[in-house]
Image (spheres, helix red, strand yellow):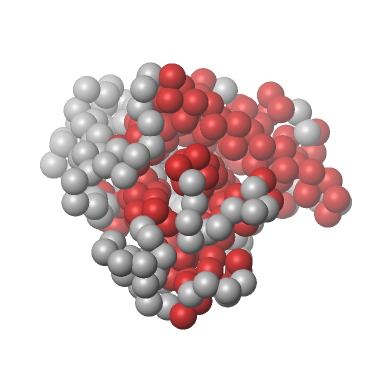
Length: 278
């Protein structure tokens, strides 16, 4: 769907929550991530032995791939929603675990917000920690985006990091499309909030691609039709994520420096709940 390399997706009988996302980095002062799975039904999201990791079921993505394949051929949004529902419920054991699986997304969102909200290099206390010359005034937008990516999510060999790097690039590029005059080194509060929302949507989309993207590509549809199906899927993810953040704003849970990670994690939970309902 959008990452640099295609993937056959994760196998069954592996940990639903990889070790690198069980305890994502929490910036100082941020509220802890919601991670209590103890009240969920054992058949959906938890192990009967809480000392053992949650393991994926056999053929975990079979239903999701079938529905997404039907969507690729027909363009039927009902098939897209059914595919996303199966992706969450069968593929990830339910909405709670699916959101927990993406805890690294909220951790990265926190780092992205902090990085972009710091004053530009050379302007005094609180200046950006990175002194990458690409962050100096006068550099191109892509130079700045590349520097932000390296500062927020360096390569670490995980698929999560690869997806996050692509998502940051896509989010900042989309921000500049919507706000051509935006200064990436001096974003407004509204622009910072939009960047987080765009990043989360892109990262969710790229994770879905890594898991089940081949189901769309292997249907023999034309390149033009495939592009349209990917746009439909991306738009659905974006609308769902935006709806989650809108709901949190209505509840008074705005994105701020102390709250960005916890708010993002809650938005992921709401997003996965919507996906699960189909």
